[in-house]
Amino acid sequence: MREARISADPAPVVIDWDRTAVIVIDMQRDFLEPGGFGAALGNDVSKLGRAVGPIAALLKAARANGVLVIHTREGHRPDLADAPPYKVERGDPAMRIGAPGPMGRILVRGEPGHDIVPALVPAAGEPVIDKPGKGAFYETDLELILRNRRVETLVVCGVTTEVCVHTTVREANDRGFRCLVPGDGCASYFDEFHEVGLKMIAAQGGIFGFVTTTASLIETLP
Ligand code: TIU
View (cartoon, rainbow, N blue to C red):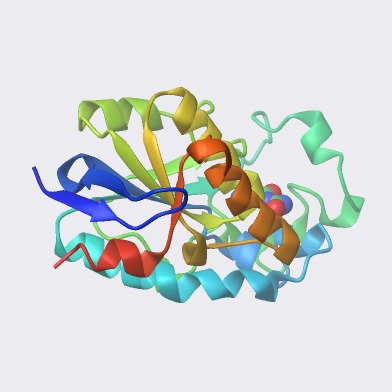
């Protein structure tokens, strides 16, 4: 039992670091670097880089304190059997899921673009969850891993705030996990969606979770 009181919006929250997992959502080259899926959708990918430093600091503190760290990656099988046709059909045909790009086939497992960015590469033994959807629970073994470890609180960071982070927090909230979202450890291609995405989590007494900062979490990890 390692209790900590975390400053958060709408209220401070007491967690047990021994029953907490830090989940890093989709910090992949396909979303953060030019030539990947995010760029193919017409986004300014440079905006996502701001989350890398805060997440790296959080992971350093978590690892030094033996806190469980889990990574996710969004992507599909090379034959796209797990990619819904409506997802694949979106966007420019030359740049859609499965098309060849400068980092390999877009959003396909095993391709360079599917990798997590070098600054946040998973440490040995840290689970990496490959997910076909936006939520980290959908068609993955994440929940099984968390229940087996008796995890009750999730710190969810990564990209993008209003898409995969939000979907995962909503899924986790419905499954009974307490969620904390460090806002500076998340990023979006849209500044206003990032801001409002965080507000939506904390509104109504913390309808999906609590919004905090990486510093507020790190200061409770010696
Ligand atoms: N497009 C967008 O904002 N996000 C995604 O497609 N996936 C994730 O958020 N990881």
